[in-house]
Length: 113
Figure 1 (cartoon, rainbow, N blue to C red):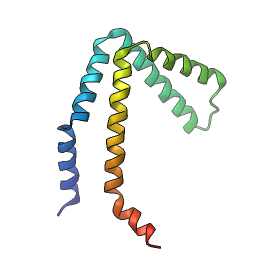
Figure 2 (cartoon, rainbow, N blue to C red):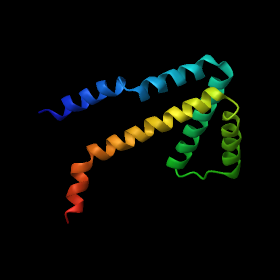
Figure 3 (cartoon, rainbow, N blue to C red):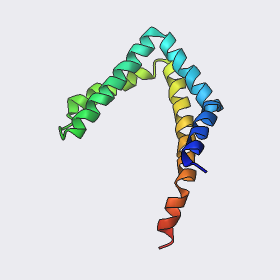
């Protein structure tokens, strides 16, 4: 058995899950609301900017944190974004469970010390 064939099959199976379908619909709803999508995009860009600073060893300032908090506070004004976040959490839970299953053989190696 080729492990990559199994991984590709898992990818195809994931595409058919309710979680992926709901996530896709939720993201489409965000994109359909121009203001929500612009805010969503701003938040993602700010997150990327802060991650870059952190990776480069630069300090995350209080102003950075304040700016990010102000942006994320605005997210709650949009039901589309709240719904997307809920669907992302469900998707993340499923991915965490799948990761535990997939990594079980490795975890068992270290448990059998």
